Length: 68
Image (cartoon, rainbow, N blue to C red; front, top):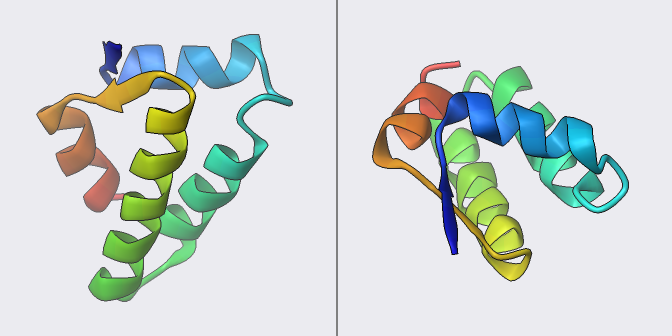
């Protein structure tokens, strides 16, 4: 299982956009939400979707995503 920092995270999406369409949907919801609980819910869904693809997120990446 590969842990992704923010740069690798964005690179994985660009390499294979069709494989990560659900992940991009959750990421868009994180960016567009002003409510912290909605951001957290979408982050959890993103982490689950990435885990199913064989990836995890580094702790700093999670913090950066919550601060978007």
